[in-house]
Structure formats: structure tokens, C-alpha cells
Image 1 (cartoon, rainbow, N blue to C red):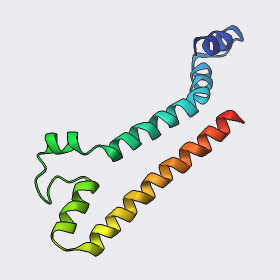
Image 2 (image 1 turned 90 degrees about the horizontal axis):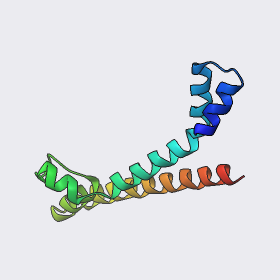
Image 3 (image 1 turned 180 degrees about the vertical axis):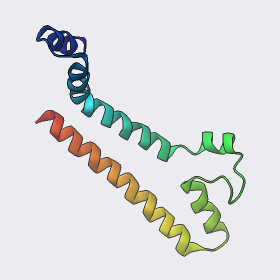
Length: 105
């Protein structure tokens, strides 16, 4: 990014326009970082359980909520949560694929 900043400043752009130019060039990297972080957060169960204490029906992540509702016999709600988790994962993957295509193209 230093090259972009130096080129913009060399062309006489103001600091604000240089910042906006650099931000525009960074959008794919920032978005992919967001997607990676979101994917990691969706998959994380252990750390949340340790920090939150895994108090039943108080501190839940979707995966433990699915397990709890399955254990009490509420299969329809557990299935709905599972489908929602699957759809969120698919959405993240589709966005990552679209991002990869736009960067490569």
C-alpha cells in the first residue's frame, strides 16, 4: 500500500483523497478478512463455552443450542437452527467465491 500512497501524493492528491484511494484499493482485502473472521466465529464453540460458562439457555452459540434443543426433544427448533447455520455458512462461501472471482478477473 505504500506505493499507492506515494504515487497518489506524488500526483498531488490531498491526504483525504489519498486515504480514499488507499481504502478503495484495500476493499477486497478488508472484505475477505471480514469473511474469514466471520467463518471462524461461526465455527468456534470451545472458546465461547469456556468464556461464557456454557450456562444452559443463557450463553449459547448455535451449535450448542442445537444440541440442547435436540436433547430436550424439540427437534423442529433444532432443525431450524441447523438450517439457519447451514444457510449462513453457504452465504459466507458464496460471498467468498464472488470476491475471489472479482479479484482474479
